[in-house]
Image (tube, rainbow, N blue to C red; front, side, top):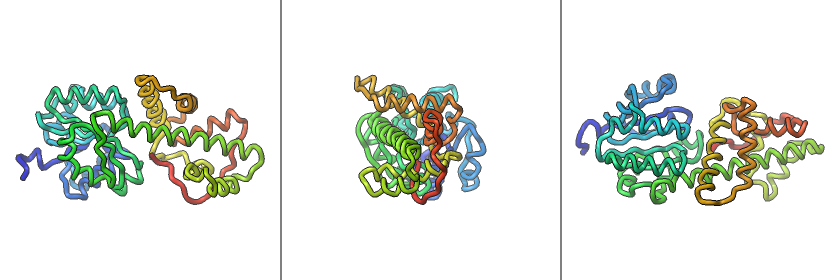
Length: 310
């Protein structure tokens, strides 16, 4: 039985594109949530489902013994944990903080130590599967940190994901997630280059994709419907987030003295697209920068299928 009212509630900080459906799945599994987001509008549906709101990260932590967070990147994660109204300002010894965000490996290890010094168990648990996986509760959870604390929250993680892994010490989960994303993001750019080259050289875009789907390039063709349809608005994964993840992967490469020339080249393309004001569009909007450089626009073509989510 729970020891107190705090143990009956689950905290959730960050209820945006990915965090919102994860929080909803916890509610639908029967858990009472206390939620906080800087944007009140992204909490409304959860409040209608019975969640309680808090005024700060500190208040969430003060009311819950387990707190989840799903935030855009390192600055937001840092503020949510160490700010004057952050998690550490409200948490108690023995609490568990499960961070579902993508972060710098260096930052994860530092924050894990800060929380450990305060008696809080930090679980680094980024997720893959994107918005569709978050909606369906079928995410892959790449967890790392204290094994006992991880097992304590495993039943909660099973409400949001179908593949739950504990990968070792804090930072391991983050590295797995960054490697997953850098593979997809670099791959997306070579698909774009192929489509621009092929169509500029006179190939029919639909025929090109159809034939590539039949060959060894098939694993990369899931992005083609989004690229050919120029479906870049209202993304589940923005170009700004993509640039952040490639940058974090390159940071890990520098720390470990591993050259990543392909990722470096991809990062430059993301930076060019960011400077062109495409940050809030889909990560696939780098196609527009490539088209401009090539002096050729891929014809808009509607084809079925595909997936454009990380």
